[in-house]
Length: 130
Image 1 (cartoon, rainbow, N blue to C red):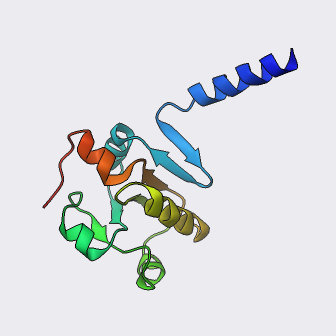
Image 2 (cartoon, rainbow, N blue to C red):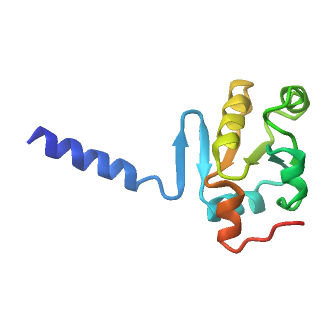
């Protein structure tokens, strides 16, 4: 009987997420929620955390390129206001999740990660600047 209640509680918790998944300290947003967050959080920083070569192949409008794997990433984001919304993405979601965690550890309060990255964005038919 206890196992049944546990499963019901877990199912209720999972269904209550409505598009935004909590991953450790960062918020992973669906394409729709990420797009909505972009539209309603001006000013904000949009950070493409991929390599410059990947960025040159296509990126979100208004994005700045800060490769999370470079030593310059932490130095560059230190200059950003801690209260401004920061939206991060990469190609598939792994690097942006790592970047979001770094930003939260640096005390940024509003950090949003695009679940599925640019792949999910493109698959949803959203615009990419080339």
